[in-house]
Image (cartoon, rainbow, N blue to C red):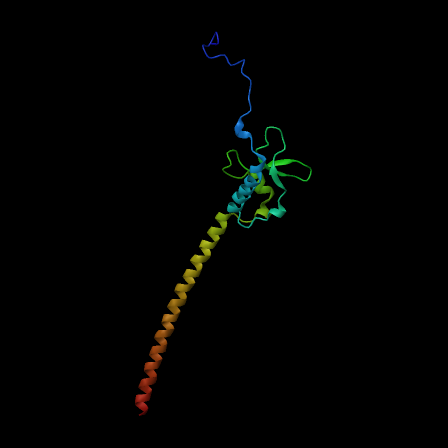
Length: 150
């Protein structure tokens, strides 16, 4: 049936049906929570989950597929951005001490440390080379002195 004025199909009779994509089987939930924690751990390798509010699936109607933290008074806070591509800024800010340093920061710090240690190694090798040169010169001087004594 066409809508009389616009020529578009008449959709006024259609009911809204919930998408099946929002349904998560109870057996799959533990694995999904583990994946969520692994996602957080990849971004924050030193995370202490014991210092973060309990993590689980939302108990709100229509949002039962969202992974949230449960506050002490029963409130819920989303952890992930829509599409699951990142963490909510409110989550990372609220639990910054429990999350620890970001993996990117740790990697950058390690890279700087490695760079510094390489530089120290180069300097130490130069000093060793100079010491060996001085030692060989000293040996030659000793041999000359021995020759002169004879």
